[in-house]
Length: 65
Image 1 (tube, rainbow, N blue to C red):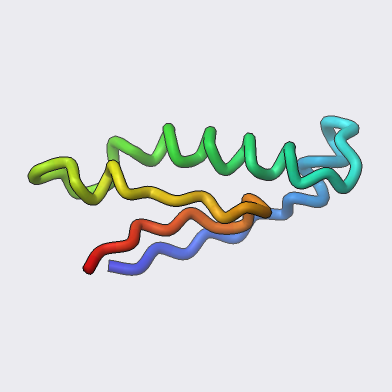
Image 2: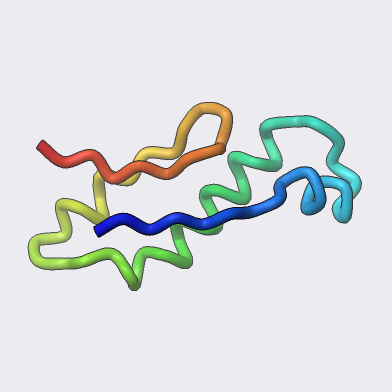
């Protein structure tokens, strides 16, 4: 399953007066991850618990091997 979302972080940062800091983007990514948890397939919980937020906050990845 592939899910694609398009956000405009520049507009979000500007609306909150946050400038170009990646800190705000990372916090937003963490918030999105928490809100999306209930939509991640859950059998053993392994997929949900492997979510990784990129250092710049641009992506949330659920790596599985």
